Image 1 (cartoon, one colour):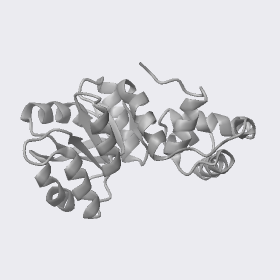
Image 2: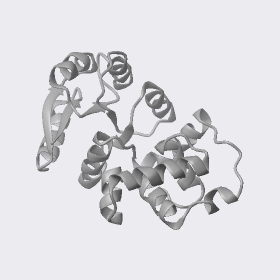
Image 3: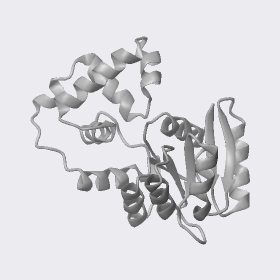
Image 4: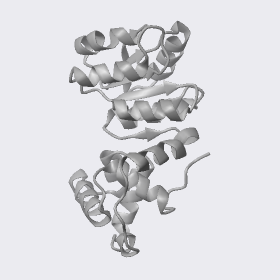
Length: 218
């Protein structure tokens, strides 16, 4: 069961999110905060698996609240909820440690999918702001100079795993789709990182987009 903490200063928004998420058999909203200044205490008490955090709030904004959670060693990843794709907001949220972004007008399916992916340790980029997030990640983490043999060095299965990583699948989901064990998936991912010179899943996702393996959704 994925335990969710909702943080938004609009009661109607929280009510809508709660209704959507609690319809899923594997998701349970265990708590709500009316503003960012309540997050640390509530998360410490409830121990959620993911925090859905509004960016704009009256007293403490979502970016500051995300920093507070990390400073207090809260392990729950934060998914930012926003009504716009302002580049400054994306930049600051990434720097604060947000694990993903979902626009408030996203589809119900995308919201649920993003919640599951981030709660399981993945990353999620809303299709409407994918390019902005990737551009910022590239500026923060410039890739090493690569040769054309980098991608060629991947086996067919490693290429397939890279595609699934970029589509947001977790290790467990990749294993299920490819009919292999999770340990095998982890081995493939380690080989991918080594061959491409990437450090983590985010860098591998950037590589996949940059090389046309995955096309950003519109």
